[in-house]
Length: 318
Ligand code: NAD
Ligand code: UDP
Image (tube, rainbow, N blue to C red; front, side):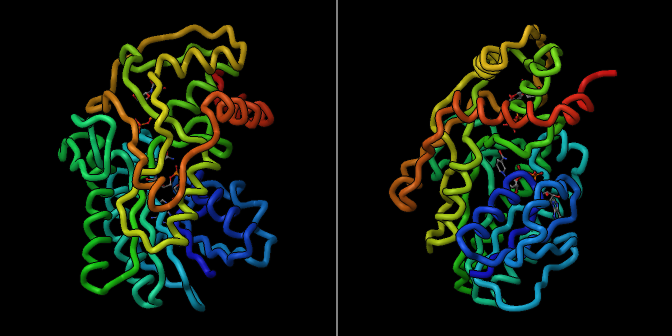
């Protein structure tokens, strides 16, 4: 297959690109490096099955040659990133998604949208099933991300209905692993970086809010299964094992053996209080479920961060 991966230099996109190249697909990565990093795709740059196009997908999306699938992952994903890039986040979720859909429609290609558990907002239904419509504040600070993704889902379904496009939507829950930026502000990277440099672990609120953390290799297997299928979804992809943020902090302190203390900070506005995917549909329709336990995934991620002391030092306070 020839697969276009937008956001292919990001955390998930670069793992997806590597996975597709490994199995013999051709990958065209389109990225503007707004939150991605060249080093994420460095190992692929010499690979004849990998092509990099440095471009902003909100300005159009065209690639030379045939296209069998478009995986649209381009979008800031960490809260500090989308707070810093609010208009860019709305643009890539709306215009960027439409350009991806048009490219897929022109080639009669499969289209897969990387949506998010954030479409459920602060959920009143728990765990979250795909039929739940969500509880999102449309004007709060998180809305630039949540509503962009909700629009992206709507426009994907409109293209499917209008042009009979073979389109599918995955709703990705919190995913972690190697290649995350130490200072991307997400909780796993923040805690690991803080633990390794001996800084206090910054728990927002009382730490009783929950998330369900999926290891990156598992998540990528789910996206690949979705690309290979004709399933429309939306399909939840995530680890149904739910942890409090306080438990995550304790586990990271235990694995790293860090002497860091815990420091409580105010909870950000509209921070969801709980989140856990119901993955019945992914099991039934994609034959997919995560296999890496959180403790093991954290160990692998911590080892990866440990192997890059120069980045950790850059993250440490002067
Ligand atoms: P990331 O920030 O590491 O990667 C996003 C990539 O998109 C970056 O390489 C960035 O440079 C690129 N990009 C952003 N705007 C662009 C534009 N206009 N044109 C071209 N490229 C652009 O984030 P990630 O964690 O890898 O997330 C990838 C996708 O998965 C996002 O769509 C995100 O919403 C979704 N997602 C991720 C998670 C998670 O836990 N990682 C959870 C839910 C959904
Ligand atoms: N969080 C935290 N300390 C941090 C970063 C995040 O306690 O240094 C909390 C955050 O308030 C949220 C949870 O951890 O309740 C997950 O945050 P993240 O930004 O990783 O993902 P999201 O909120 O998008 O699920």
